[in-house]
Amino acid sequence: MPDTLTFTSVHNIPGTLASAAFTTKTSEVFKEENDIAPIFINERMKYIPWGGDNRMPYNIINLIESDETLSTCQMFNAEVCYGSGLVYNTEQATERVRSEVDDFTSDNDIASYFLGVCQDFKHFGFCVSVIILNEDASRIRLAKGQRVR
Image 1 (spheres, rainbow, N blue to C red):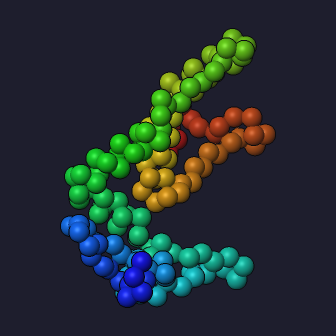
Image 2 (image 1 turned 90 degrees about the vertical axis):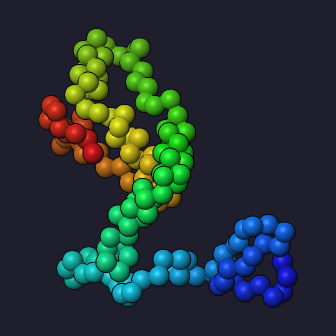
């Protein structure tokens, strides 16, 4: 790279119709009007908001969905990440367990839930999946018809 490039700028790439953006401070990627400071829940707990208005994920999704090509490509990427979907192997399970797994999967749209997790991963570069178990951690705590997500 030529010595004239600075790493907080945008430069045209010679011989192409493209540009490259360089930054050494990732905090400058999304410019915020407000300072991003910890929000205190109590004296022992605090969290960092998602952007100055705590709405950055929604803003990113709106930007992605407003561009038809990007939206289509991101969905394709999520589907590729998802692969063939979820496979429940109950071959070695008892008939009772097999029946419970079948009931659970028919009552809850787990496939859509995990596709959503893959979309979050593709949109934000990470994802969090929270599944709440019952008290003895032997089952996922859901009522019939209740969605996982």
